[in-house]
Structure formats: structure tokens, C-alpha cells
Image (cartoon, rainbow, N blue to C red; front, top):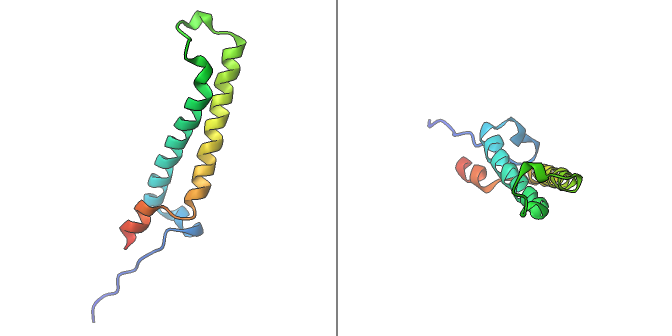
Length: 91
């Protein structure tokens, strides 16, 4: 009798114990963070010297980090529904 291959589905809360899922989800979340931060840094494009930094620029940086963090969290929560790279590897 041939041994059955156990295929563990990596969606829902089962994914939280899968190293492959965390790797793929972390990569997606990092990319989402970077995209959100780039949008928030729109006001910093003219910044050439650190001495020119004003509170307005610092507010932009804080806003960019918050936007990026929110996008990263949303990305992780969305990944719980399934990640094609990980689910395809399980088949």
C-alpha cells in the first residue's frame, strides 16, 4: 500500500503555523509597506539636505510610516485567505 501524501491547506488560521506562508505573506506585506510609504513621501521629493528638515516634513514621514504600516497589516490579513504561491506549492 502506497503512503498517502498529506497536503495541508494553508488558508484560514492553519496558515499561521506554516513557515512558507509566513515567508510569502511577509514578502507581500513588506512590498505593501513600501508602496504605502512611497505614496506618503510625495512631499519629500524636493528634500536635498538634512538641515532643511522642518516639522512639515517630519509630519509627512510619520504619515508615510503610518500609511505603510496600515497597508502591511491589511496585506497580512488578506493573506490569511490564501496565497497562490504557497497553495500552489502544496498541490
